Length: 296
Image (cartoon, rainbow, N blue to C red; front, side):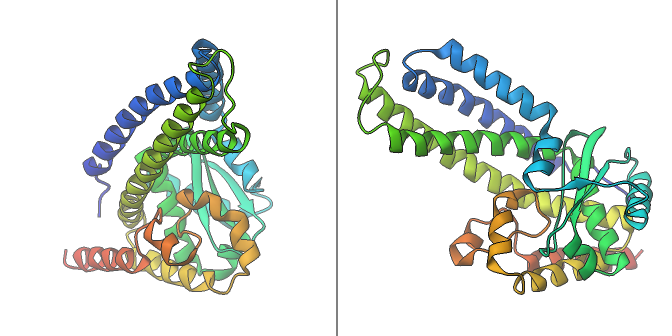
């Protein structure tokens, strides 16, 4: 199975970025009200944070997860697998990182194909056979190949900032506005409400794009390895192992759900708004790909 550009994913990323740009404008106006009309101050701060997020997204994400960049001497098999799969995917070899965690998971991060990192947990390396782990690594490399990581990073960044404004505004606002804002407290209320709308919309955008990109990365992994059944087996194993992991360990990593290969489970409501499609459907797609490849 040869690699094919996923135009459906590209279209969704374009639409997501367009809508996010519109949200940035609305968000800037809301924050200008909140800080008393200091739009330029906000714009400068927001641009600075955005640039930091863009250029250091891999470092920030790895640090937030407690991940450690590892050398080939420390994890020779892991490095060898990623190097081989990167060559098969026609990609530069990314940085390799490991998280000391019982939660069996993996993710990719970075701003582009030349500045990317693939991270796995010790739990996933203990859980999977080598061909299954190769399938997972290929899935993460497919995210790098598809260039969907940065869109998710930007979307998550905006969502996080908007959510923080809602929380801080509700907690500290208390109906008391700042002198520079229009009608004082009224400006704060408007800013909080707009930020809430921005957060909800960006939240939904993240989930809609994230679900589709997981399907796309699964197809990409099948193209890279030529072994869809290995990834299907890995997904089932990871999903099953999640139920055995202590809740405290799961809670620590739940905020990174959008980037994981399998999301941290969080009940019925959590599954309804999950960043990932159901594992059963992903496995079904992979088995269809397996049958398709065997028919040639």
